[in-house]
Image (cartoon, rainbow, N blue to C red; front, side, top):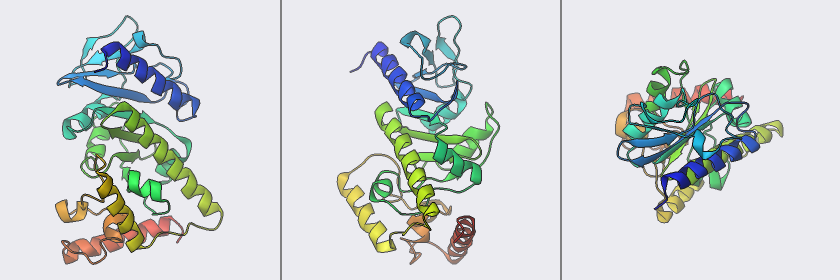
Length: 268
């Protein structure tokens, strides 16, 4: 088991990675890791993620209240968003928030990452919805993110950035990388005339690969949001679940309408 100091060093390393890759600018972004039933380590506010050392890292409880912080440091102003993820997703042990260029551009344009264009993205992420806009440092962002927590491991924040979470800090970071790479490929393929999407059967085949791998987290391959709660998903229900099994007529109509609007935004 890693010591608290080792985890702090890992947070600093991931912070430098997201800074060096241009996923954050200046003092943007925040990272947290669960270390106990009611203890979390998190990055401080007002500090560049590319220049942190372990003594920068703060410790907070499940309410985001400071347990320990060195002089001059206080927890990220977005700690409420992190705590909501941990509260509603007991399987999550780390959260990463950043502003990667392409993914954030899609978030600003109001376009979710839902087109099935690449095997790795489909297997790792499924798709990435957009949580509606909320004012920073308020409960509006946690409330918006909450709507997607039971279905996905990555979320775009409208006009803000991206949020990823997983069973370890490294995996949460990888999901951020995968989200940005997916967004960049989708953007560049549109410049070239538009991506060639997988068929519903090809998507289902990739879902089956994920199921065989037994990968952790929430994903359309393991859960149909529409069938479970009446909320529409992306290609998991609008395409791969096109037979609408487990979906009533009203839900099917809602899915069709949302799909139409998304496709219109995409310029289809």
